[in-house]
Image 1 (cartoon, rainbow, N blue to C red):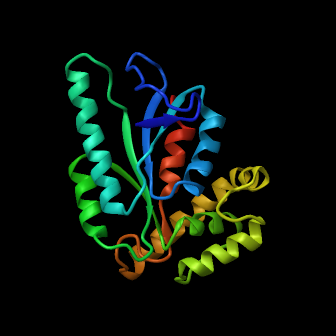
Image 2: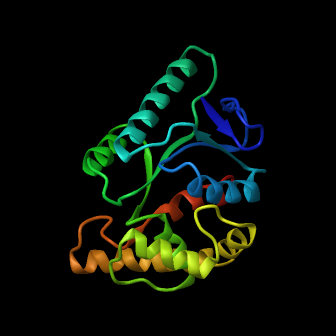
Length: 207
């Protein structure tokens, strides 16, 4: 089943609706959803964001998104509803296995990825400071707790601060991408994050 924050469960959106529809699967159950729900609330007049109930490691997450997309497209073909406009998986690199397989599977089935290395907290950190050196997830999480004053359950004050500094964080994330390209680092090397791409899809829906 899937759930949308506007009604707790949600129906598959109609293609006739003017709003862009996104189905998002997140690795974790709290932080990612709380953060993305905040952006959805700010732009819900032109976008529908629904969250899949499945959570897990990257490969299983992508497999779930692939299966849901296939099922939705079958139902759409039969005239029983509409598939979502976009399917997304949000996960950390962390120490997960099968990341390459997850990335290749997503590309093969048109599943969009928002990946943070080492973890989502790097993205939050980039709102508050530059981060050029690699770091582990525990360090990133510790710094974010200190700077935002909260843990995995983001407070309204933390969410407001992150939204206010969003553009600055995007600039820093893009600078990291440029750094990695320049020094020949692998794609999505530590530190890196592209969750901002999903946020931008929510922010710019209908624009």
